[in-house]
Length: 87
Ligand code: FES
Image 1 (cartoon, rainbow, N blue to C red):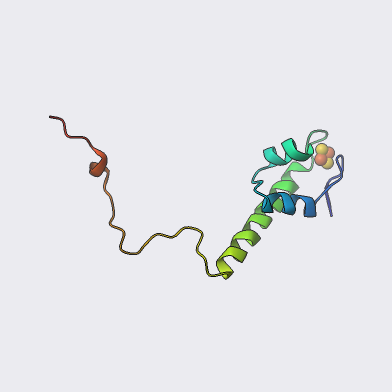
Image 2 (image 1 turned 90 degrees about the vertical axis):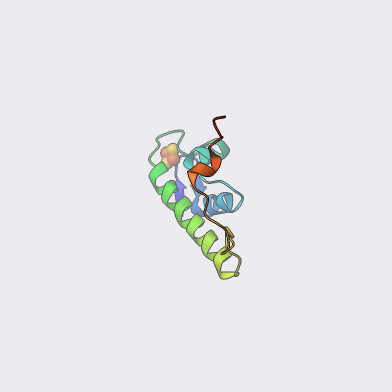
């Protein structure tokens, strides 16, 4: 499906760009020129990016690897931990 008619950019191109690290409409504009002419495509492009990012994280989670690993025995750190002594 075409997302940007002015530049002929499809949802598949956007999904591929997201899989390669693109995370914003601004980056799509820099890469493909998406939105440079009439700008009517930017809202739909944002939706395609969000959906692709959700699918990407769902695939990572289904592989059994968490995106961020925080050990369960990690002690909590209060803000006073970072306060320097005054004397
Ligand atoms: S449809 Fe994308 S700039 Fe016009």
